[in-house]
Length: 403
Image (cartoon, rainbow, N blue to C red; front, side):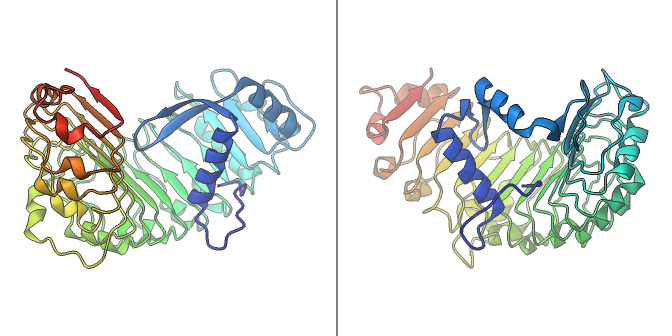
């Protein structure tokens, strides 16, 4: 997406949808192999022969700095374990992508990045995942074509220069796992093209007029925000949001009421938030419009005793995949479960007190896959033919029940 490779014959098709369509097409042609479905995402490996073909096609456009070409390098992988800054190619005027490997936190990584930026005015991709530098060079503000900036799992960086908010073309900003970031840039609302934002921050509260002003956001994730107590209250302003992930935010106490107005939301994950009380939101159940939720993951929320109906309001007819896991105090599935008429797959894991399935589950005719594990009481009554709840799931084609 960042390099402009996604093209569509359809007007106004979302680039994420175009990319997914490309992936599905390539999968169907065995271009990829070793596909692994991870519920909300999937991974795959390019076939070795296809990889060799790709290298022959790009030829001089790609450089790993192990050998230098005379052509104009567009995509550069630089490994600071094997090279130092003096080995940087001189001709970087056409560079579009820089992938920097710096697991040991080399002292010259910051100067190297600044040098590359000063020589490369057409950069679209900066991938620094796993690097350990302390500062992002201020001259990044001049990269007017930058679409993708990945700083994930940098354990040393504490602040981002506010100048990155000048990057009007930036579409993806990944700060996931940057556990020492003290606060997000104060002018983050000016990233007017941002479509995906992964956040790790030490803040207890998010700035007003910040993230929730990013009306272009399609994907938003809060990851390992250990001090964060609340999300932005005006979250309903994210009118284009399709995916929301909240994980390892152990001081988060509640979710904003505006969440139920995100009618474009398709994927929602709430995982490992030990203080989160979702029952507080049951006070107001009215929803103005129908939702579009297709995948829901709720796990590691110990305060939860029953699945919160308010999250699914308006989406009972659209939900296709549901994962319930690590809910130690949930006793039963709610009666409204039988309304999930589009549900195709259901995963129930590590809910030790869960003792029965919902009434009416036999009417969920779209349900094709059921996985139950780490639920001793539930597993016992779901034994094939003899279990007292077997009749509720006998129609399901693919059933895995672990004792």
